[in-house]
Image 1 (tube, one colour):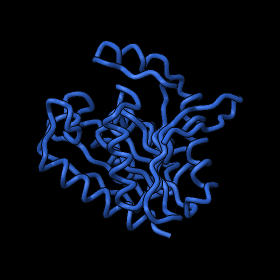
Image 2 (cartoon, rainbow, N blue to C red; image 1 turned 30 degrees about the vertical axis):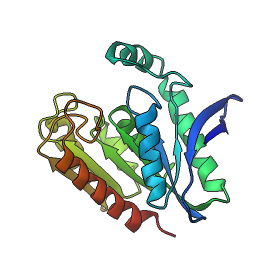
Image 3 (cartoon, helix red, strand yellow; image 1 turned 135 degrees about the vertical axis):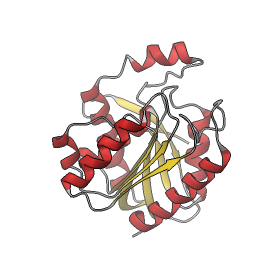
Image 4 (spheres, rainbow, N blue to C red; image 1 turned 90 degrees about the vertical axis):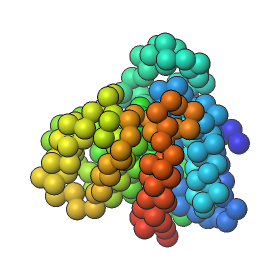
Length: 222
């Protein structure tokens, strides 16, 4: 269902809230790909709700959805970093305060959203984070601020956010002493977990999904 989230600047963000059958439940802020909060992201929110999570699909485009790659390139330019992290923090706060939640909040995102899921961990807004093939180029100081469990899924043939950048993150996490982090590699390209994209890889997507559910159960339960 649609839900309006109050933001620090006095405006609201309309997101999508998927509720599980059993409440209260651990919660997840879902951050969309660069196409926006489209039906595929809503489907993913519902799948997580079916698995027992209270899921809020955040909308960094404030109601706009791209129909094609050119539209996505235009919309991504509208994001201001400071406003986006404030919006996502408000989403996490909404879920943490909700009587339908158990006080635990994770972040999760794909591509564009994967990078923001990581930033939510850096900002200390969540109790755990799941990154699907997002932009993970961050400074050593930023990575050192991560204090929550982190799970990452990356394609060995990703030509958008390439393996070398992920390997830098892996080294940064080790150097910073972020003990609970797991970065998994798959024999696939970018957006391999999206069934509506050309590089969808069903075996890799299925394995990443199961690993995600296992991680969320371990880190997100009451």
